[in-house]
Image 1: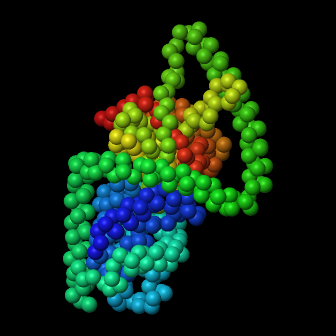
Image 2 (image 1 turned 135 degrees about the vertical axis):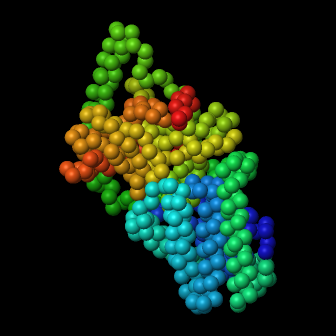
Image 3 (image 1 turned 90 degrees about the horizontal axis):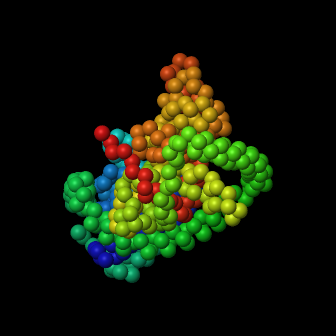
Length: 167
Length: 286
């Protein structure tokens, strides 16, 4: 794993997530760039490296996120792990996998955030959250995923050999 | 495959351990130097991207709103006329109030605020919390708990400035940046009152950038169009600052309290500059 690539990519993605992404919102929902990068990395480089990217990305997000610290780390790591499980067992088609991973990954990520916020004592309306935040967010991230996936795959191709590195 | 999934499982356990350690370190303040360093490092990047994003946001908003421009224009003209008349009445009331207070020897009701302008350089990177990052921090005299407002620019004719509107309050400070919890965040709550009837309630953030005023006693008068102000109770916010306007009221006779949906006085999505009140000290929680 190239740690420099991970840090530079994730710091830039966090900066974009806090500045550009809010202006790309539709019906009040904004995309999750760091999440998409972690999911794409899990597909391109394997679940183990995806989890490490999730730890780093989650740490950066938690510095700005307003959720209990550590929650983004857990949410991204679990999402990266489940992306690997999904790839191994469910989706192998090269076109379907990134879209499905982005959709399901967003649902998992948002549900973990909502559960963590509720455990921390914040008021959470689960029905409203699922209908007006989680599902639209999953569709928005799935729409953006092809672009992010191509960029991430090309980036890793430039930096690494085009094989999975066993951790 | 089982071997690789086992290794992935170990990494997942490690991630959870790291998260718990990070939570512990953060709660004890040990991560503050890291936050401060990263904030300082990212400040010019965020500031540049934020300015570019403002232009992008205007372009996106333009296309989104194109279809509604004519109707919105008509509504805004009507609202402008109504607000002008209301503003003139307020000026008259303020003048009369000042005269009466001078005659009675009262101290000034609204102290002059030390307003620090702060550029918005970032917003929360998720869909569940509503916070801003601004490019002012402890080096500029910002303290945790400071109230943040938005002030429309004063006119060139020398009229008195329109009232400040509440944005939120500072919840975290580093040397060069501060994080602001907006009043539209679901975890925010502000003691409010209805300007006309003086009915009290608690205003908290709700979905879609709206506000909800709860715990309004049954029998108190509140209706669509009423202005909601900060009550000053609890000491976290100054008294009399606008929060928003009532757009709907939920009232059932079988319930103890009424609720009202409130449109915030400021569009939180378009904030580029906010103002931090440096000389209002919130009352510490007991």
